[in-house]
Length: 232
Ligand code: CA
Image (cartoon, rainbow, N blue to C red):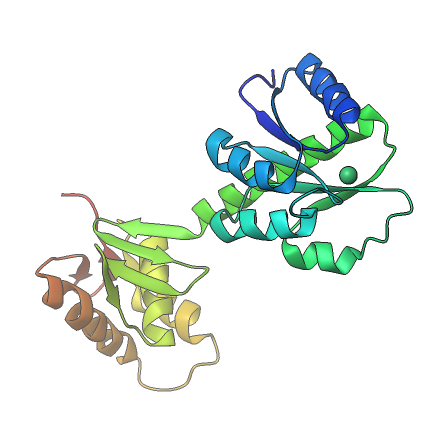
């Protein structure tokens, strides 16, 4: 069940490394081993593991340095730092270097499996969250987390209100939305002002998107409302 998941074990005590390898393989993981910090970096890039088990005290480069270097290249691989009992491990330093979790030696192998499963689950959740933060409408991509809008690779600069209006339309793409619905959602129920503010902002968006890129994404249904269209 775990046979497509690769674990990089970084451990300079050969016997312990071998023990972890056997246990992990028995559990169905693929395993790569590195016995010092330099080898850990090399193996990381050669093997592209899904999880890294990283001993803190290592020859060549210590675990914190290894962790930092991996993090520079790869933001999302789970790294579980392993420290020996009695080692003066500054947890904060480890966290700062980008480790996701900690274990203290000696550990029960069941605990190790549980930590690996938890780390992989967190990574999956994060990936899903990132996907949910992206909205698209034909060539238009909206990143909700970063508050950015692109047409193909071109950045489109929007004001906060324009952005909210566009997001609302794209979240409901191909559905006609009335002026009142837009006012309530984007300007709030307590908005008092000109109701044609919606028309004005639709015009701003059209200037920045439809007119600029020669497309027709924002449509008007006279007397009813507006919709964002991504069907032909
Ligand atoms: Ca060690």
